[in-house]
Structure formats: structure tokens, C-alpha cells
Length: 126
Image (cartoon, rainbow, N blue to C red; front, side, top):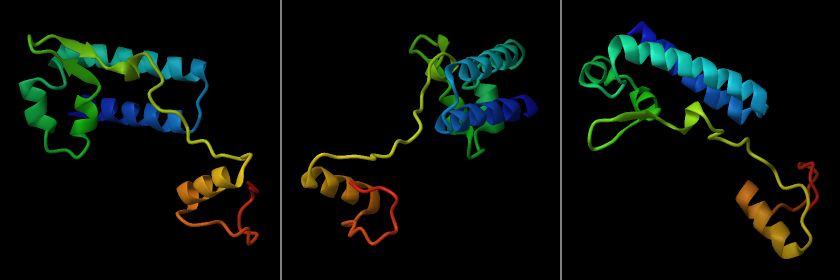
């Protein structure tokens, strides 16, 4: 159980760091750590989605997150998901400039859910 909790914490940390805009080198280091921890876990306890681990941790609210870091094919082969080798999340970006009023309206509706009347509360002028 403790090993699954460690995997869960590291998986969440990688996702959080990607949202915060971690650079590629930092992400590779975290992915290397995840690969090492995951390989050690699988050697000792089997796949996360294996019967024993699913029964042990299946009621945890984060089990779907953990089970998503590995893929199981129809023939039972288990492979690692993209989080082990690729950037899976990009930090949100905000539009800071548009060229037309129609684009500004679209951005305002997407970001605010209403028309931005430029009442001084926003730092961006579209």
C-alpha cells in the first residue's frame, strides 16, 4: 500500500509541475524517478491494474489516476502510459492581444463568461 501511495504522490507531483510550467529537463528528471519507482513496484507487486493491487487500492479516490499510468492490452501485456516519457499537460495560457472586436468578444466570453466592459478590473486590453 505504501508503494502505491508513493507512486500516486509522484504522479500528482508530475502533473502539478507540468501545470506550473516545469522546463523539459526538470520534467525528464521527474519522469526518470517515476520510471524507477514504477519498475521497482511492478517487479515487487505486479502491475497496478493487476487483480491484487486493484483489490487493495481500488476503493481509493485516486486509483483511476494510478491505473491510467499503465495500459493493459487485450492479451494482458502492460505498457507505460505517456506520462513516463512525454509532456502530458501544458500550463494554461492567457490571450493578451487580439486584432478585432469579434476576437475580443470571443476571448471575453471564454475567459469571463460575459462581456468585459473594461471597468479596470482586468489587466489585459483586447
